[in-house]
Each structure stands twice: as structure tokens, then as C-alpha cells.
Length: 63
Image 1 (cartoon, rainbow, N blue to C red):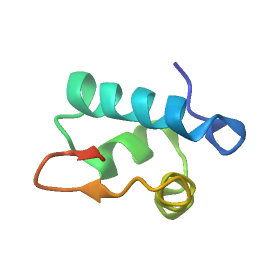
Image 2 (image 1 turned 30 degrees about the vertical axis):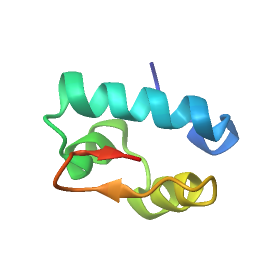
Image 3 (image 1 turned 60 degrees about the vertical axis):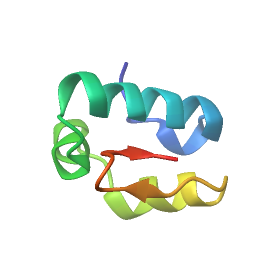
């Protein structure tokens, strides 16, 4: 799944995909995920925050 178009995605679906990628491919490291997909960390965090999801570094996922 390519996250290049994350800004137009449904936020609940986006959160699910991002959490799956964080868990399966990036060990919960958000910086690695955004670097790999070459997307803006702040834009991703803002998009998910607008739907009520915050990144929890200790859990390595958005909730």
C-alpha cells in the first residue's frame, strides 16, 4: 500500500493502514515510515489528529 495519497484517504482507513505498516514493517517507528514513503510526518499526524487519533510513541501506533 502506497501512502503517497494519504491526504485524500478516509482517516479511519488511513489509521488502520498506518498502524498495520508501523507494526509489520517499521517496528512502531513513525519516522522510518514517513521517510520510507517520503511523506510529511506533520501532515500525516495532523490528518489523523483531525479524526481524533494521536500517535502514542510508547505503543508505536495511532489511537
